Length: 112
Length: 114
Image 1 (tube, each protein chain N blue to C red):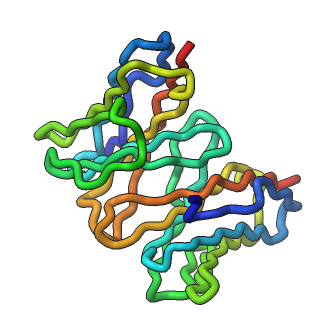
Image 2 (cartoon, rainbow over the protein chains, first blue to last red; image 1 turned 180 degrees about the vertical axis):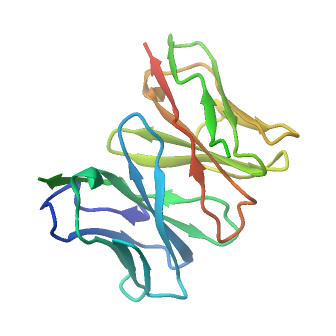
């Protein structure tokens, strides 16, 4: 049972435009969420996080939105840059479990 | 501060063999987690250790095991390798793995089973 889903395997966006990556989850016990970026042959790199007590968190070009009632979060990248081309994973954790459940990733391609 | 290091980076083994992968966490981090990444499957949680104690384990067969040493370094072992064990194995460390924690990942060990 896939508790965290990223239904878009890939996304292409023009440089300078907004990239929106989506993630859905089913477990209402999840209370902390992360986004990671991954380049080939490297480990995932942390991008941004959000706690379930918030509905938005910003860090530079990256903003994460959380809709708890819909069990949905999204990552907005504005403006998108060619260097943002990578695979993006969302991950969710429930307090006291000491683990994250990851989505299957979305491959973002930013076209110059 | 040095990041998470994993050794070896690449490994080729034959079915039926066993393998041990090593992970050194970021200095000061006491929680170490292991994940398996296969194409199309995202990252699957294997186990998490804190102060030499396993606090959680994922849904993997008993052939997968791990341990953590007093200096927080960790190893994972896979016995009786199967072709399906071919994957990228990622180690991540965090300060204490409490509810609000952010794992820092190493570069991974690419295991190929032939």
